[in-house]
Length: 475
Image (cartoon, rainbow, N blue to C red; front, side, top):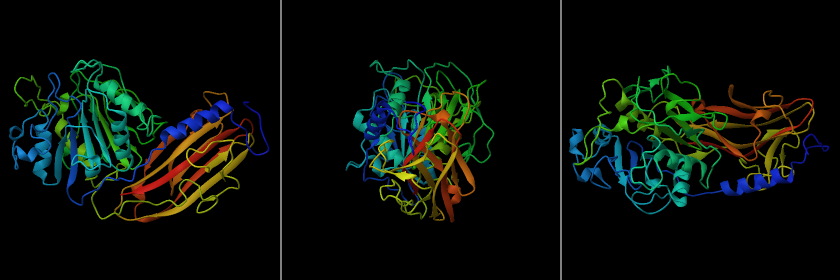
């Protein structure tokens, strides 16, 4: 039915409509729990429930679990806690601003256990070696979506330390592509099937990035000793950013360390556990001191990233985070358009319950363009973002087109916040379902800004830009 037109919109094919309905149903998972952010203490949960100690690995901050303080309540050196990640834990503990626990059982969110994710600001996954269950993946994704920080530390392909058929590369990719919350490349990257034997990935030049230039120091290089990288896909999540790259790589390939946002939360990826290994741990493990490697700055990288993920950084470089006096809230009115033509200002017919394009949830959505003729549609809402808040704008976008080109953007949707252009999408971004888009807009805190969608369509062949389930979350 490509190229056919009705008086207002082109009908999508039955197959495409079914795909949207299935996608929408799979993604519609809600929870009433939200990360409870402390004003001064940033709570970090290290996972040890997925074979993080299998084989020669020892990826724990302390053998005392869940509370490392039971081993030593006032550690001064890495050996006061036992584990290959003890330097990381002790460094955070010595600041007086962090509280740490270790999870040894299934990860949950919204439950009553002391290690439930709702009690923490950041979850660290240091090379898991068993698959997360369906319930765990739902818990992790909802935790991040609601404002939590997620630190994913991988290792090289084939590092199946417990011989169960899965390594960290497969486990993390499964988390991102096979969950009930959002499996449409939610973080904007995938982990490469690689085993890179050695190298010193270098940091990009960005003096404003809080992970590369945080309170724990400046990052220049990291270490790779049998690790992997990630491929970035900013078309799926424009917030994804490569911070350190394997030698000879840049842009969307060869990212050894990357950050992103999802919903109101923040995500960090590191391609190897060697940089956080401090060389000390339990007897019988052969470990390597990457933490203190003189050719790299691994300690500042791990600590700055933890600070950013937990929301402890003063910079507004990402989505989630606790601390401060900001009251967590969702600020947009009529965010799912279910109240019809209220709160938003837009072109006639943009907010609609037409069955020709399925809503992601509910009945209504915002449908810009789709005429197959020269046309412009707009949709906007002004919102006041309180001072001192971290702020994230998110929405789900479906692009449906009759264009057949794979190289020319004939029809475009531009998204702006105040005077800043956040992203531009086109007929080249057409896909069968909705994709979550997320943007940090913390720089607008203390102002009243207009969130605006502007769709401009060419003279022939329709492109529909369908938006649903918007949110502007502050924390």
